Length: 184
Image 1: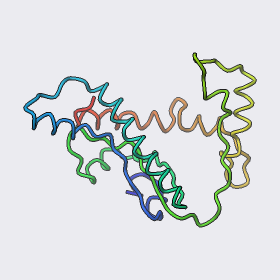
Image 2: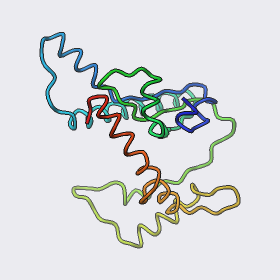
Image 3: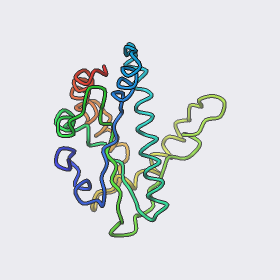
Image 4: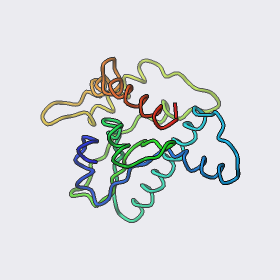
C-alpha cells in the first residue's frame, strides 16, 4: 500500500488505515429487505465521503487523546485502480484517503493554518479581501519549506491543484474506478 500510494509513512507508521466511502453496505441492507437500490450515485457519494471523513476524524481524535499522532494520506488516489484491486473492494466501495497513526519519532512542529476569518463564515459566505489572502499565503509559507528552500505555499498548491498538477492527473483514474465501482 505504501508503494502504491507513494507514501512511505504508510509502511513505517504504527497503524495505517484506508478509509473508504462504502455504499455497498446500503445495497446489502436494501437487498435483505427486497428493495432495489435507487439511482442516486451523486447523493450517495456525497454522504459516503462525509461518513468516511467523520470516521477518520473520530479515529484520529481518539488516537490523539491516547498520545498518538496521525497523518491524512491523499496518495490513495495515485494508483487507485490497483489499490481497489489489492483491497478486493466490492462494487459500491471507493477508497477516499489513508490515515496513519503512531508514536512520533520527534516532537512535531507547529503547522500553521489559514486564519479563522477566511475559513469560518457567519450567516453568509464572506469573500476575503486580496490583502487577507496574501497575508494567509505568507502565514502558510512555512509548511512548504523544503530543505534549505524557503516555503512557497502558492507553489505547493500549484503543484497539486493547478493546471497539469497532481489532482488533474488523478482525475481519469478516479472517474474510471468510480464507474467500475458503480459510483459514477
